[in-house]
Structure formats: C-alpha cells, structure tokens
Length: 357
Image (cartoon, one colour):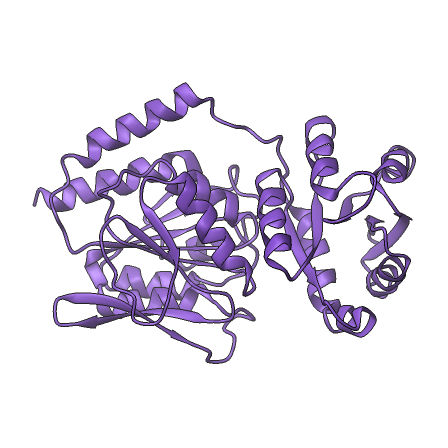
C-alpha cells in the first residue's frame, strides 16, 4: 500500500506562480497538489471540499491580503501554512507578522524571471512543505498582559540576584524559531548576560526580525555586524547569508561574520556559532536549542557540553518541529529538556547559581 501523500492547496493571485508551484510540488512523489485558488475567498471554499494538509499562501493578494486570511484561518481552523513572500523590506515585515500569526515557515519568490527563479528554489519549496506537514500547529496562545507582566516581574526579581559574570547565552533555532525566540526573549530582564542567536533565515529578513524583537523586548536586539561587542543586555542575531562566530580579545568578546560554505545546508548555521562559543567561552556559557528541523546545532552543543557549558533543549510538546532539539538530546549534549515557557527561568536560575559561587 502506497504512503499517503501530502495534500497541498496553493493560494496565489498569479496564474504563472500557481502553475509553476503546482509543477514543482507534483514532481515530488510524496506531495500532491489537490487544488489552487486565485484569492482567499475561493481558497476558503476549496479548504472545505479538498481538506488539504498544507496551504501555500501568497502574502500580497487583491480582495483580501494573505496576512488577513491567515489570521482568520488560524482563529477558525489552524493548519500548516507556508507563506510565499517577496524579497522586499515590506515583504519581510509582513512575513514576520505572518509567522507571529501562526504560519510555519516561508519561501521567498524572486523579483525577476519568476518561472526560472522558482524552479531554482524547487528543493527549498518541497522541503518546507514537507516540514510544514510534520509540524505541530496550535492556535496562537497569547499570554494575557497581566500574566506576561507577572512572569517578567518574577524573572526580574530572580535576575536582581545575578552579579556580573562573564557568562554568555547562545541560542540556535529554525522552523518555528521566530516565535520561540520572541517568547523567550521578551520576558528576559534588561541585565540579562549577552546573547548570541542563529535562526535559519535569509538575508533581508534577519534585520526586520531583529528590529521587531527589539521593539518587544527589554533587552536590546540587533542584527549582528562584523566586530560587534558582546555585551550584557544585548542580543545579536546572525545576519542572513553569514555564519556568526564568537571571538575573544583579552577580556572582551566580540563576533566575527563569514561567508564560508553552508553547514548542515544552512548559512547562517548554528554549529559554527556553538563551536566558537565552546572554544572561547567554554564553561562560561549557556546553550539553548529550540524548535527546528534537522540536526544543525547538535554537534556544536555537544562541544559546548564537553567544554563545561550548561545546555537546555526545548521539549517536544512546545516545539513546532522537534528535530533539532531531538538530535542534540541524542548526542548527550543537553543538561535539561524543558517547555519553552520554562527556559527563561532556567537560564536565570543557572546564572544566579554561577554568580553565587
């Protein structure tokens, strides 16, 4: 008996894109495009009759834009959605909102020669649809402001006990990671030790994402630049298309960026960052691996552990995709496996213990 195929509905106002996407996805034996719709109103009817497993959704459409439709869909019938976004600043901002609203991931369409450009992205498109089909999609659970304020207050009280340390925090994430990072960072107090982050994301999007986090968080969040100092109260995000590594000069840490070949098929990749943290910070570091597909970060986290770091992994239940934490756990490089909501407190509890020694 043949394996059940992933049923996909394509929603895009461009007949050309609908045709090319259908061709690309149908070439994969595990995927079947069951329908296509030129706008959200047609898509709404097709969703009822075709019952797809995954939706690909254009961000910019007439009648109703993709973001509005996504928000309505996630409120009524949560399902895996891969956004199709343009490589523009506005496209990046809207895509960040779409990820906040529950989309699993996104692909970017080329601005010129769409037919050939999309064909070159065929592997990425099919891969993201397959990952989306395996993902856990939940209704957007916003902590109400009182609850969120209470968590921030509790963490701030914990952080007041932390003396200045040389400790730094390194976080790796992929699919589902934009929301996981937001949830983790926005409750951390302003005196949190320095943070380095690698999230699998293309260029143009990392700057928009870092700016969005900076608006929401008490710490300062920015896209990393070559030579940036690693300082308390600041989180540096690896820029799209660049690996980010930790360096040390005397008592000071800084970051270095490079365009060496992709690692684990990614650039930025988590492993080079974790490996550099193991080398230069060793026992003065905390490693965190969040939701994502694949094994990026597993080898680097093990190196951190061997160098004396304290490592945390997000648990399966709170992950969109459990791949990266699962692989890191399998190597033996993880000290604690926790729900995402418990990770900020665990980081601060460890820092408090370290600073009281």
